[in-house]
Each structure stands twice: as C-alpha cells, then as structure tokens.
Picture 1: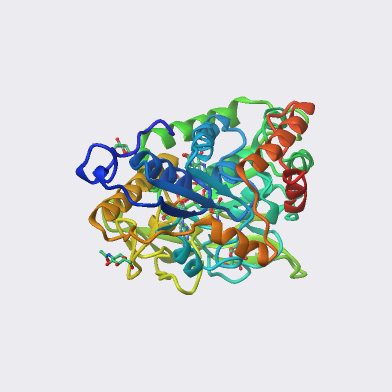
Picture 2: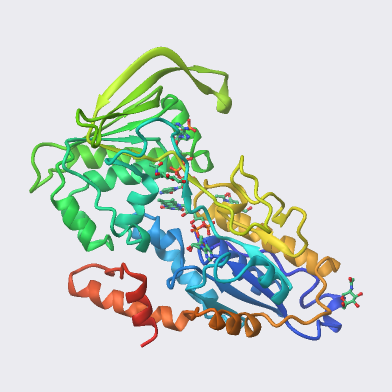
Length: 448
Ligand SMILES: Cc1cc2nc3c(=O)[nH]c(=O)nc-3n(C[C@H](O)[C@H](O)[C@H](O)COP(=O)(O)OP(=O)(O)OC[C@H]3O[C@@H](n4cnc5c(N)ncnc54)[C@H](O)[C@@H]3O)c2cc1C
Ligand SMILES: NC(=O)c1ccc[n+]([C@@H]2O[C@H](COP(=O)([O-])OP(=O)(O)OC[C@H]3O[C@@H](n4cnc5c(N)ncnc54)[C@H](OP(=O)(O)O)[C@@H]3O)[C@@H](O)[C@H]2O)c1
Ligand SMILES: *[C@@H]1O[C@H](CO)[C@@H](O)[C@H](O)[C@H]1NC(C)=O
Ligand SMILES: *[C@@H]1O[C@H](CO)[C@@H](O)[C@H](O)[C@H]1NC(C)=O
Ligand SMILES: CC(=O)N[C@H]1CO[C@H](CO)[C@@H](O)[C@@H]1O
C-alpha cells in the first residue's frame, strides 16, 4: 500500500490550454477526516493540480484514522503508509487541522461556503448491531470498541473488558474477528513489543480466556468471500493464525489456548446469567445455505445451538453515521449516496473511503477509491462544474470562526510533538510507542 500513484493531472494543470489562464486565486478544497481516505484524496488532488490547496480537518488531535486505531498492533508493517501520509501533510499546499469535530464545531454548510469543494472522508464510526435480546448485557462488546480499547482510542479507554471467563465467542468471521481472536490468544511476549496500550497489556496478562470461537452465519467457503478483494492473503493469514496458535507455548498462562470456527450459526439471543447481571452464553440458530456463488445466503432451520461463554464480541461490521442534517444519507446502506464520489443533489460536495462505499476493503481499496474521487473533482474543476472564478477564504475564515466557538486546532507540527512524546515513552519500555489515551493530555503536549 501507499506506493500507488495518483491519476495523472487533468487538463486543469500544466500542459493544457487552461494553464495559460489559471484561476486568479487558489482552488480551496476541504477534506473532512484524517484517515487513509482523507490523506489519499489530498495527495491525489495536490498532485493533480498546482492551483489546489487542501485543508484536512480531523476530529481527534492525532491523524491517520484506523491506521492508528484499527490496524492490529502486531502488524506494524501495515502502518508504513503513515510515511506517505506525513509527506502529504507536510506538502506546502496542505494543512492538517486536528481537534475539529465537523458537524458539531462547524457545519458542512459553513465549510462549503468557505471552500470551492468539500470532501467527506470521515469513515465509519458506528457498529452494526445484532438486533437480538441481551445484546446490551455486560460481557457483550462490539469489536469496534474492543479494538479501540487495545489500540488506545480515547473514547474506549474505560472499556475494561472482562476477561475472567474461559470461553470467548466472536460473532463474525471477517478480518477484524481474526485480529480480535489473535489479540486474545497471542503470547504476551509478542504483544509487549508492539504499540498495544499498557492498560490492554495488563488486562491481557490477567486474562483467563483459553478458548475463542469465531461464529459465522455461512460456511467455510464463504469466509474467503467476505474478503474477496484479496483471496490469497486472508487464506495465508488464516493459516498463519492456525500455525501460531498451534505451535507456540503460552508461557505464564494456564493450559493451552485454543481457537476454532463455528459455521452455519446466527445469533438468536444473548443468554443472561442466573442473576441476570451479565452474559453467560449465546443461543444460535443453525442455518442452511440457499443460493449459489457469492449470493449464497444463510437461512435458519428450526434447530438451535447454545454456547456457554463469559464474553461475546460482536464483529459483524462497522457502520457510517450521518454527519450533518444538511448532507444526504442513505440509512439503508449506511453511506453518503454518491455517483463516482459526487454526493447526490449537492454541488461541490464529494466523498471517499468507507463513508463512500461502506465499511469494507483494505487500505489499498480505500486508496483506489480516493484516487477515483480526486479524479472526479479534477474533472469537475476542468468542466466548470465547480466555479473557481469566485475566490474562497478557506481556513482564514474557518479558523477564526472555530476560535470564536472555543475550538483551538492542532497543526501537523503540533501532532509531531505528540508523536515525539509517544515515541519517547515507548522507547523507555521497549515499544515503538506508548500512545497517549486522553484527548486533554494530547492537547497539553501539542500546545506546549
Ligand atoms: C480493526 C480494523 C483493522 C484493519 N486492519 C487493516 C489492515 O491490517 N490492513 C489493511 O489494509 N486495512 C485494514 N483495515 C481497513 C482500513 O483501516 C480501512 O480501509 C481504512 O482505514 C478506511 O479509511 P477511511 O479514511 O475511510 O476511514 P478511517 O480510517 O476511519 O478514517 C476516518 C477519519 O475521520 C475522522 N472523523 C470521523 N468523524 C469526523 C468528524 N465528524 N469530523 C472530523 N473528523 C472525523 C476519524 O477520527 C478518522 O480519523 C482495518 C480496518 C479495521 C476496522
Ligand atoms: N489485515 C487486514 O487486511 C484487515 C484487518 C482488519 C480489517 N480489514 C478489512 O476491514 C474491513 C472490515 O472488516 P470486518 O471484519 O469488520 O468486516 P467483514 O469482512 O465484512 O466481516 C463481517 C463479518 O460479519 C458477518 N456478519 C455481518 N452481518 C451479520 C449478521 N447480521 N449476523 C451475523 N453475521 C454477520 C459477515 O458474515 P457474511 O459473510 O455472511 O456477511 C462476516 O463474517 C474488511 O474489508 C477487512 O478486510 C483488513
Ligand atoms: C487498485 O488499483 C490498481 C490499478 O487500477 C489495481 O491494479 C489494484 O488491484 C487495485 N487494488 C485494490 C485492492 O482494489
Ligand atoms: C461563476 O461565478 C461568477 C461570480 O458569481 C459568475 O459571474 C459566473 O457566471 C459563474 N460562472 C459559472 C460558469 O457559473
Ligand atoms: C455490541 C454492540 O452492538 N454495541 C453497540 C453498537 O452500537 C449501538 C449504537 O449504535 C450500541 O447501542 C451498541 O451497544
């Protein structure tokens, strides 16, 4: 990832007749969200035209989205894309403005007035729900929260997952489910050299979880289908997981850790403990398959199955949420409805990444679709669909407006102070970084 090249510049840039009459003032583009989609869209726009300036607004004081808060700590090589994103952020026509919650601190309409074009790249911050009774019982977690917890997402730092029971059930068999299973079973010696949070390490050290079952509604042949973007890789990762858990001795932990799959099972009900205070198991419908190929669906039979467990992690997918009432939203598909990245019914508004296509796909998929959106924007600039003859103030209007509302932004240089602090704290304990978990603490470091 990260090595792909953006689309060639449109006629809007050098080499075309329009170059002789460039816009009087820079073309100002605003990107909402500092994850892979935001950075790849910015990168591609900057390369595509010398007249474009890009401001990236990010809710958190720290950039990179799921590369920081999603990608598993034991896969550091995946995070190398951060180098490319850093180059983009340091580009002279790019600015990062962290600590801005778009939709709350500033509306999309205000951004659209200040910029020639606005790109929504704010990802998928919700979780799909199972829609079964008992889902809200203590002991049931969404994979999104569990992942956020071990990766240091500020809003998940208080999760305190209860790992005092022997069996954990993960619902779903996607790559996130695999990540969670691996973190639950990996030897501590391996994890403690990663950027997993200290808090998660301590909780995992005291874990009694011995057995992790990954439950899927369809069969073994459909597992790969959910990740069909890249068939050999998930197969390889599955094999790696099997080898890892079978071959390693789990020093310092009781017994032998086991994991396994349960196929053809859909959640029916989370079973409460006798006193009703927490989850103690899950009741599953036994399914049969109908249809062919990718369209195979699971249909429940009258048969049911129960698994006793002390922990249930629902890993059935992330979900995008609406950002602002003024922006169209398709609640059924949970995306911003768009045509090649152009948000429906809203001139000047675009989208890329998970909020554009839904919460599936690896970083390379997100890179490709962000390049596609950038290409669409460059086309609209060239065709005049975006009117650049009026100059726009960009951040020179937005930043004072934010200040008036008591919101102070975090620049990329500010983030680099946080980065240096985290790296320093990590080095002291033999980790690549120790993440700051608290937004206030991040801000204090950023603004010293
Ligand atoms: C647990 C997990 C592990 C993964 N592991 C891998 C992996 O190993 N390899 C791989 O290739 N892919 C992996 N992926 C997939 C990859 O992370 C996604 O393809 C990619 O991150 C999607 O990019 P995005 O920019 O659309 O969303 P995100 O990465 O979620 O970025 C969205 C950004 O928008 C910000 N934001 C949200 N709301 C607002 C707002 N209102 N105002 C301002 N900013 C806002 C968020 O804080 C975030 O920084 C993983 C995904 C998950 C969930
Ligand atoms: N290392 C990596 O490359 C990596 C790591 C993590 C994530 N990612 C990527 O990030 C994306 C998100 O991952 P993900 O695991 O959240 O999503 P995913 O791959 O779409 O997997 C979701 C799982 O939930 C199941 N599911 C969905 N709705 C369900 C329901 N109502 N009841 C029961 N089961 C249900 C799906 O089953 P069905 O198949 O039957 O729909 C599937 O097993 C994926 O594209 C993934 O490849 C990549
Ligand atoms: C991204 O696009 C390139 C070029 O079109 C293609 O070769 C590659 O397979 C795509 N990758 C993904 C993950 O979609
Ligand atoms: C662009 O905006 C200017 C100023 O409002 C206006 O005069 C011009 O007609 C517009 N051009 C197009 C193509 O809409
Ligand atoms: C496990 C689970 O489904 N967790 C949460 C997912 O998101 C909804 C809100 O959208 C929460 O109510 C669930 O608790």
